[in-house]
Amino acid sequence: MLENIANFVAGAEWIWIVVIIAVFLFGAKKIPQLAKTFGKAKGEYEKGRVEGDKELKEFKEKQKDQSD
Image (cartoon, rainbow, N blue to C red; front, side, top):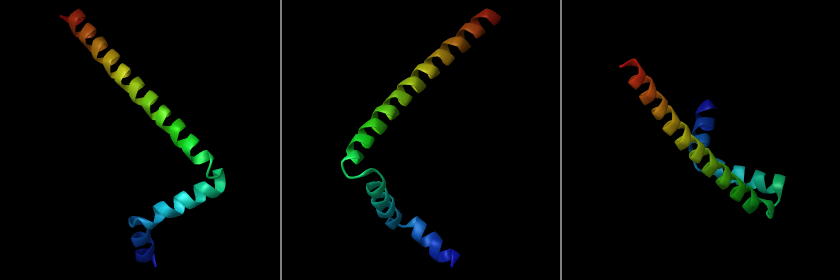
């Protein structure tokens, strides 16, 4: 039984189940809006991550210069 569940989860069928559940929960008209919002959020996350990495690098360089 566990083997059947593992095969099901590993397959592509679960994607269709998630899509069908999303359509039932949010309605077909809301799915594109949710995808757009998710895309914007992902873009903002990436932008923040890049900025954070840049600030961390600058901070490390500043600390290195002060210790020399």
